Amino acid sequence: MRYLVILVSLLASACASTLPEDFVFDTSEGEALLVFDQSIAGTNGTLILTPADLETQEFVRLPAQLTAGFRNRIDGSAANASIYVESVDPGVYVVSGVRYMNGTGGSTTRCYSLGTAAINIEAGRINILSSGARMIGSTLIVAGPGVDPANRITAIQSTLSEHPGIPADLPLVAVERLANVRFEPGIRLVGPRCPGNSRFEIINTTPAEASNPGTKPESSPAASSD
Image (cartoon, rainbow, N blue to C red; front, side):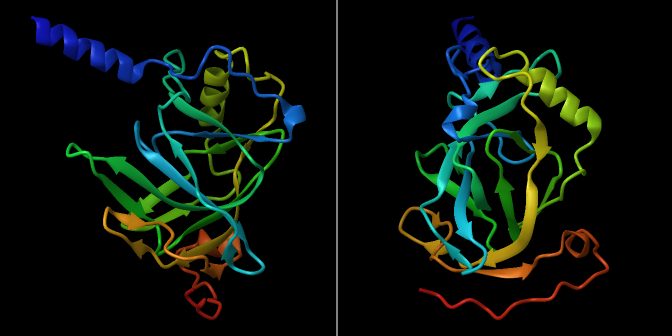
């Protein structure tokens, strides 16, 4: 019975909201609000977003690593739409991968090096990275604006409304995909480094072509490795 009580307690904590009650998103700070869900990273998975410059095809800063569920989950039981909320610097990011801890204390990283999306995260808005994503092996393709179903947007909006620190009048937008890119992963003693160096290659920049499986995107010359 004791073990059953412990198990029930763990399951309850896994579903409970962890975003602090005193969390406040202040638009005057110039930050962006990012919302993602389990179509992007499951609970306790760490989403890896790397700031990028599309003109130089370089990663410009160290990756932002956002752990799903760690002080950022809103349960959303009323709308059946638990989500993860993070304040981030606005700008262009490459969705580089996701990392999960394993039972031995190590971690496993799924690095989207074969193909992923460069996205734009806008200041003063609720940027949704959600069910417009589909994963194929080491490839992540994020659909462009307007792909998220209206009812999904409504569910996310309903879930966000459960937290008083998030302004109700903020516009919700699906993240804008600017390009599909690929890059080289790196290898280190404990799991892969993702990305592996400071360069990436643009596969294409036309969302209509990228979303049409019958269209072959134009590739730019391969980026050199550092």
